[in-house]
Length: 317
Image 1 (cartoon, rainbow, N blue to C red):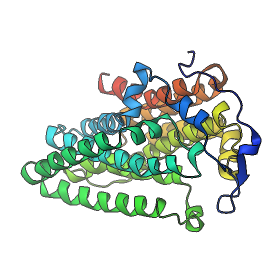
Image 2: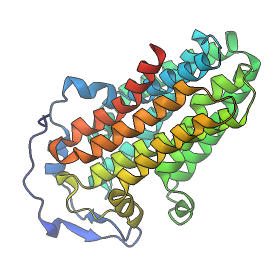
Image 3: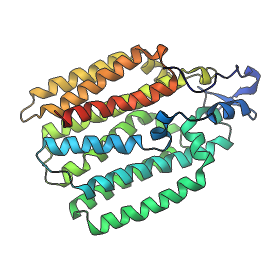
C-alpha cells in the first residue's frame, strides 16, 4: 500500500550531533522544519484510530471480552467501558508528555501521532479531563469493589512506570526494555476484568496472560524496529537492543506462536485465547517478512490489526 506521506529530501548530516546522554542516537542540533512538514502532512483516514489513541482501547477491550467469554463470564459493559477509558487516558497522557519533545533536541524520535497530539494539545487535554470524569463516575456507581481494587492497583503500576520513563532516568531503564515492560503492563491491565470477576488465578490463566504480554511486547518491538529503520529516521542509529531484535524478530514471533500452541496441553487450558495469540504472532511475522513492500504508516496500522483480527475471529468462532 503506497504511503500517503510525501517523501522528504535527505536532511544534511551537519544538522546532527552526538548527544552524550543518548550515545546510540543522533540528535538534531538545530530546528528541522522539514521533519515537521513531513509529519504535518494530511492524515489518511485509516490512520485516525492510531493518531486518536483508539487502537489500544480497542485491542484491550476485544481481548478482555475474549478472556471473559472463554471463562464463561458475561462481559459487563461498565467494566469494559472503564477499561477502554482508562487505557485511552494512559496512552493520551503518555503522548502529551512525549509531545513536549517536539520543542526539544529529540524531535526526530517523534512520529506523526506525537506531532498530531502536540498540535492539538488543548483539545486532547480537554477530552482527557472529560474522560476522567466519566471514568470516576463509572468507578463510583457501577464497578464491583474487586474490580475497582484491581484497577487501582494496576493504575498505580502504570503511573509509576510513566513517572519513571518521563523522569529522564536513563541508567535504570536498562533493567527491562520499555517495549517488553509496556507489553506486560498492557496484558496485565487487559486481564484485570477476568481476575476481578471471579476467575481464580490458575496456571493456565497466568500462562495466557504471560503469552498475551509477550504478544503485546512483540507488537511494540515490531513498531520500534520498523520505525527506527524507516527512511525518515535514516540518520538515527538504533540502540543495540533494537538492532538485535530487528535481526531476530521473525524468530521471536515464531517463539510466541509455538509457545501458545504448546500451552494448549496444560491442564484446564482454553483453546480460543491461545489460538488467537498464536495467529496474531504469525500475522506479525508475515508483516515483518513483507515490511519492505509496505509503507511505514501501513505497517503501523496493520500490526495493530494483527491483534484485533484474531480476537474477533475467536469471538465469532
